[in-house]
Length: 182
Image (cartoon, rainbow, N blue to C red; front, side, top):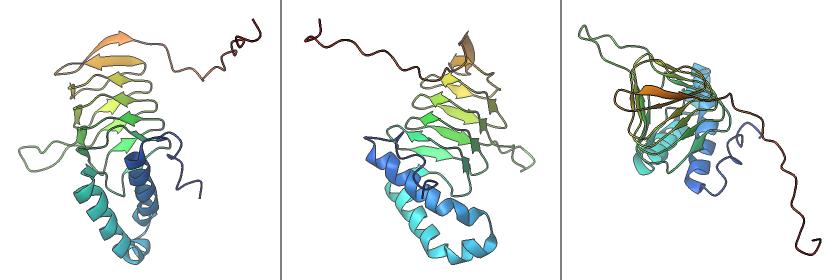
């Protein structure tokens, strides 16, 4: 059960994100074997209709998505099924991860997204691009080249504007005394 709900807490207050990720996690095992795909076929059709047609999120069930995936304002999200998404990622609306069709009819590889990556709205990541760990990409950016770890990138085409320190584990802040104790 923990597998199905691995994105539940991070999507707290985001019912659409919770529903989409629960449905995705339930469908994902069908990508592991042809037998499961046949058995799960009615559910996979249900998943496609509900998630893609009604919720407007293209997240194929065979896509590799790490735990704690947050869908902020999940609308118009398009993810190529061959993309890989790391852990603790935050995608906003109108984001596209896609490949490129070459003149000879072949297709490029798909984006690989590292851990702790945050994408602003309307971000397009196209082609065989690697986005490092602890990366922030600003709204409206078009990424066609790799982005290194610990970077902030913006623009069209996206360029790194700042290097940031690696993500730190959350530190428990000491509680402030209440007004009664002062």
